[in-house]
Length: 108
Image (tube, rainbow, N blue to C red; front, side):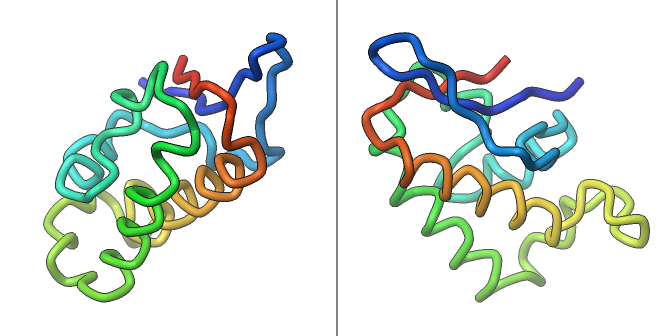
């Protein structure tokens, strides 16, 4: 199962990135749960500004300690459930949250 990550403004305007990486597979749940940001599904209903620091810290952590997270990769040779793609998902989320900090995160 995959979850689409987007944000909704107080006036109900929906914002998302054009990247397909904002679709986050359930297969990333273990890797993301081990990071400061936690599993993306748990972001539902939080304010984007509240997730900027945890998501940024998660990107820094993956860059600094990739070996620690290799155990969570499922098919890294195909870039499926890989550290590389997880970092791309987190970067897209960070960009979206920084652009719309007052919006509410939707994970559906």
